[in-house]
Length: 297
Image (cartoon, rainbow, N blue to C red; front, side, top):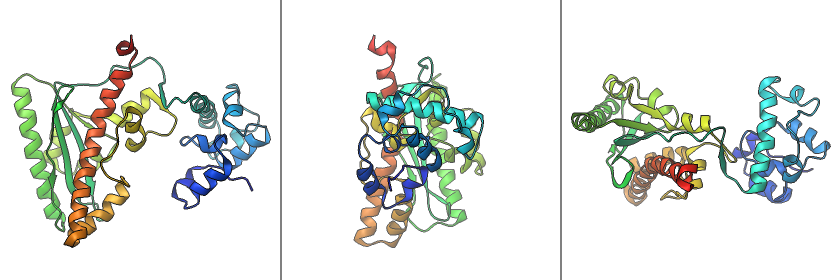
């Protein structure tokens, strides 16, 4: 049986094996996001669209019966097909991303703050990553996290939040007193949804925070997805740790709290991981500026 790449493959131990069996020209494994259902892939393969080249050569006209084979038939299924064909063309051309329309102006500020949180299995935030730089000069960047590697309760987590608010508040006060604009960048929604319960933090972020993921996904189409770990490497950025990811970080914090040699190694991993997360956001903005038509003109 020929394997097909679907969204569930990301959690399967056989993914690497199936990728090898399918081969480098297989359409389903060449595309890593916006994936059709297995039924839709089989339908396309029956139509002779099994390779990247086959799919890339397809027109935008929907194959009869495509929508009916989707869990969300109609306009959403139709858009999925068109984006699938577009991503196949990107894969064939070796293009990792492209603008959805006109190239947008990359967001910037006089003082740019990159912000990222880490939380444990109890959903308590133990690390508030904070990286501050002057404008777009990355040589001025300072990583200044608020963190506790001791076991946390609700009260302890609230205390860390107040520490973060005090530190971010000083950055904002000093900048605005000097007549400088401040933007606090984050990637996706947890940095707002999980921190809004702390009034002092919520007040500082209101009107100053900027969801870089939402902005990027709205303006650019990628071949491999829009997670931070997928986008930053497009611009040459790489994490300072192996196995970088939120799930791994939750395992590491338990190890850090246990102490010993393994715990000390986990502390170092977590610090390097979070610093990479906030640095990646700045790297994406800088990379987009370098890639813009104006910069290449």
